[in-house]
Image 1 (cartoon, rainbow, N blue to C red):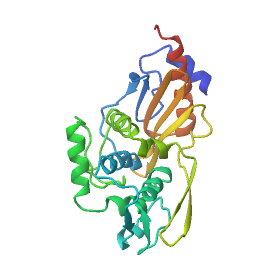
Image 2 (spheres, one colour):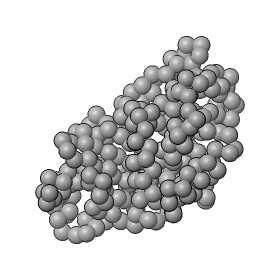
Image 3 (cartoon, rainbow, N blue to C red):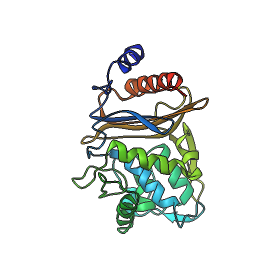
Image 4 (spheres, helix red, strand yellow):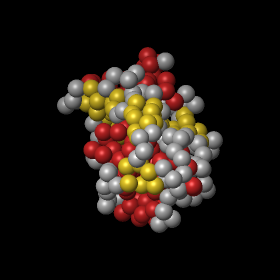
Length: 254
């Protein structure tokens, strides 16, 4: 699979037509391959990268106590298993949201009705033309849209914050409620620990969006970021794209 992707990369400007409905590959900050990268699509839980960005841009206090309300506790999809009435530190909720893509943690942090307006304002401020949000967690909605290129921009901004970068690299994490209940979280990003140099960023899935991923890896002086939206074979494709991108990096003229 990887060998075939490497061979194809030399033959076409869009060498991976079957990688995903939309994709983008950047090497050392430069987009080298893409397909329908500006097409608005459902972003699934990749939405949480913007949620996290708006949260940490502040005012942000990782130690602030946040009480889980009934709406957050009843969240569907990926969950940390939070219970209504429990209190956790905001930083622990952010960990749950980014490591395990926990929707209950996401709603606990960003469930205020005004929060989505902040997300859309930030998207407009940084010039994201294909992005609008209807909820902070990535649930399918006709008004929830982003593109591979916009998500690449969001991921780059998000990863410039240590509060985010230090969490998305974790394969496993443990958080605790105020009363000491321990919750163990496992990443949904299967590049971590399996793909050399992988350090993030976020996976996502909904029935409407399909399998999505923003992946990042660093080897020596080179950095690779990939975005896949609606990929049939997300993990093999992602691994192949990463290898092809590093091969491209080592053969590019300096």
